[in-house]
Image 1 (cartoon, helix red, strand yellow):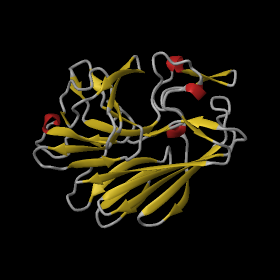
Image 2 (cartoon, helix red, strand yellow):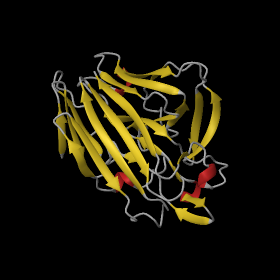
Image 3 (cartoon, helix red, strand yellow):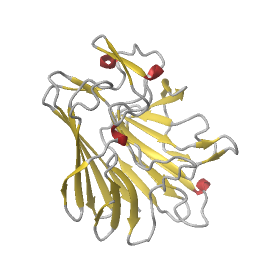
Length: 292
């Protein structure tokens, strides 16, 4: 486990997937991250790359070739190296080196950096296109926060508060068979109270949101996730059909990319929400989590 810490937070990160596994608040004693219990969902904070969500029939086409790729891509399962580390920061790096050419015909390097600042954790991504041609990709976060955070609270004591981007319409999407359907403009999105049935039909997905706050209406503890300029965000928890309950975590997922639409052509270059990098260029993005 790679550990960074300051006077406020102690964060544990594993090299597999460069995944955050633990966030301990030194002032209030709370553990904020999901435990990764396989009975519900065995991951904690995977990074999604080079796709976000699922492809139609788990396939895509590029320059006349068909490739198979499973949901959320492969970066969450690779081993990163430590590039630089201090007490409060760490930079991890992964270089493709031809290992994924059969499923993703590009060469690339990915840096994931974690930076502590007060009671906040800043996450930075840097993607370098090392191919000889333009590169198409998506990248997304998938951090899972434990709820309830405090003993004697319930999931229903928590709500999600939304800050939409200024002067933009919030578009709401729904997932059917893991594919995206646009529902239209969300005219009044400010607060959603958590209930066990909220994710009975899969994730909630929006565009043009720049901050979501998960907060307890009793203790006021929670997490602010800030992701200005990200085009999409997903919110998800595993719904347990057997007893109609929600798993004891919630994911707030800033995305540069999204699952395939139901009517996709399958051509990666035409994929809804896809990003393009010219050869030798670098993509950079960051989001921040404030633990309260």
